[in-house]
Image (cartoon, rainbow, N blue to C red):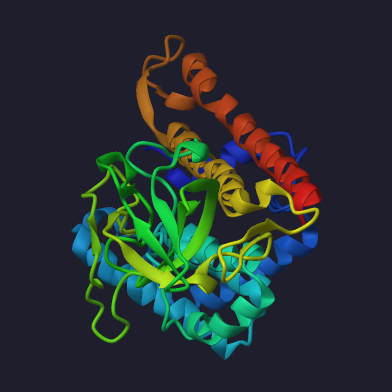
Length: 368
């Protein structure tokens, strides 16, 4: 009679050296004991409202049903944030936990992770104060429109233009080429009604480089695209389909001059461009840098989940017979070839956690 899976795993743990407590490992992956305790506390808030089934249906539903479910989850998270009066840091953590627990990335992920962060980092306090209520109340649902068909990380080659029209005190945003179409921004396809758009600043024919501009995409009342805005889905992806990545083409769309990010550079009414003394040019891209480090940390979590599943399944799965005891089947994890495949991945996940934490501290030390 074969042992149950739980008995097999218990046996494996008894024979394993207890040199690394689970709590210590969690402290390592979270960065500190305080962060671990915060994560556990907030996870409890969310899990009290979720059934096991709700956290396990990601790959058994159609993409449309996934999106409906994930929007309900996002609504639940925001309700809990308000109900429990969570501060900004705890609110962001709870949103991360919702993806960790369920596997669902919400369409509003980019609103919180990039749109609001961009507004907070490179727009002036006056701009933030003017728009804060609309953002906090979710009247504005934003996205971060940087990547184009032709260029992504090579920001200096972005082609979208923002031409200053002094007689109107406005900027005219335009997609002059096929390759200048914004392509891939999350939440752009159907969720966002406003965006921070990265475009080349042109004043009287002179190019002043890439800057960030606040651009309304859709009517707030009807969610219909505004004149000059062509927006839509890029189609299904191999994964991450609960986030609606989209494309954006602008045809001479005009916005107020004060919709330009002016914390580190300004354009006056007469078209005079100036930089704030001591401003770091890299701050314009700080939001994307932050997101890259979040992705690094997310990769460590994804790998750690995958290797946990692989190791546990290998421990209970029987395959082949023991040469010394022909009647006894062998656990897959007992094969050295399997150990060589899966066990190093455990070490890699911890290495990526450490690298992510170190890189993030370097980023914050340089820019914050």
